Every structure is written in C-alpha cells, then in structure tokens.
Image 1 (cartoon, rainbow, N blue to C red):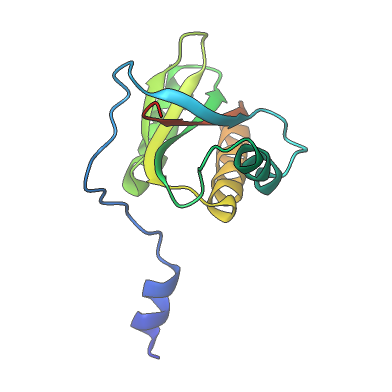
Image 2: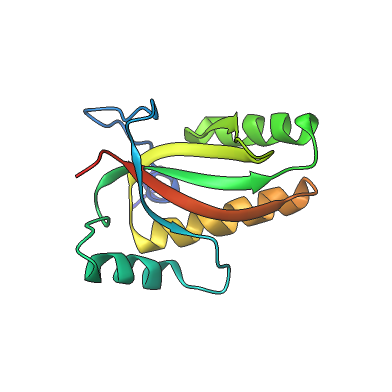
Length: 136
C-alpha cells in the first residue's frame, strides 16, 4: 500500500447520511454521559441492557462544552467545522458541538478525548456528551 493509501486509512471519515437528522425539537436524548471517569463502552452497554439500540445507529452526537467566552467558542467552531461539527450556544451558558454520525464506543471515546483537549486548550471544559435521535 502506498503513502496515499495509508493516508486514506487514517483520514477522519465524513458521514453522508441518507436522512439528515435535525434538532428541531422532535429529537430525544437516547443516552448521555457526564462522568469523565466512566468508560463510554460501559455507558453503551448499560443502554443496550435497557433495550436502547445505539451502536451503529445514525444519531446526533452532542458534546457539551463550557468555554470562557465568544472568542473561544468561535475558535472551537473554526477548528471543528472541517470535520462536520456545528457549534451552537446551549441554554445554560454552554456551547453544543453537534455532528450526525454512526455511534460506536471507540468513536465516542475518541471524540470525547478530542473535545476535552480542545476545551482545555481554549480555557474551558468538556462537561459530557448526549446522543439525540428520533423517538422510538
């Protein structure tokens, strides 16, 4: 495999879902984690035990970030936009970073680590994440 092939293997994938989800008030929280010590795989396992199918399903992954000011939120938006993240203010002074994707434990862990590092670099904190989807 050439260098171009190796580069393609590690490039972040873009999700082109057949049916885009829109947080228009009809989506519901199907899972969440605000405990940094709890593994994302454990959260997904608990959801599966309760009969909530999450893994491999197209959902909106929402990271809840607490950033110090509008400049930090703007910088976060600039850095995250190339990977399909959309930032919006949350109702409680937080910033929401949303992206539709297929959910896996590995992807959740990877993105949680990424958001924690980004928020810290901008003087803030990544409080947790939520998964939003259509009601069952």
